[in-house]
Length: 304
Ligand code: CP
Image (cartoon, rainbow, N blue to C red; front, side, top):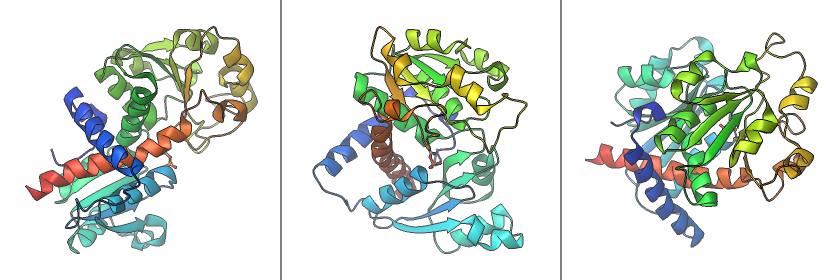
């Protein structure tokens, strides 16, 4: 397969290969070797139809560290605004001899659709509320780095599961690797199908935190929510926000994760986000090595 469209399409051995490749690139970066010549003959287009800080910058950095040629496309400043379709847009980019497309799009399945209509390797950088595969890979990689392994660990994903591509990709990735997974949040933000994915469901945050080794705190996505999902942000924070007092009252030290961007004081307080229990910036750091690994492995198939 020449694409990374979702974790759903991967096997456990694919994840291990990506992690071993990322280990190698992380070790290279840590030796202050910031550029390797691996992809000198590959051209990559990063096309973003939604805003991004971490994903966009770390894909670009990963590509540059592999010596690929990179072009960046922001839909809001493009002829998409004049009505050009997704397929026309991408085919025009590909006619300039681009080999790989990294795409973020607000529509679930946009990457899958594109992969069926254009001749290029597609990497899904987030498609609506569907999947965000590289985020889940870097999340599991960061758990492995902090706790030694993902298998057998208890991981709770807290918050807006209903609208979260990070949640779905993490559930697939964690289950594949043998972790025990629960989701926790208000009933209105917990889709009924999660139980069918082999995931526990909890609406009491304290119970979820007492059970887990790792809590992945999702962002409340104000852009996808309305009042019908939860009465007020303040009430959400009272029931599902993590603060230092709550963490200190547990009888063990759990690992805190967040995909970013953080709503400080809503799903997580600053003293938790910036504490030694938090691996939030490790996740961002690992995002570069993981994306280097994904691009390198896909590009090696293009070269064959
Ligand atoms: N985690 C994540 O996808 O962040 P960005 O939206 O800033 O890329």
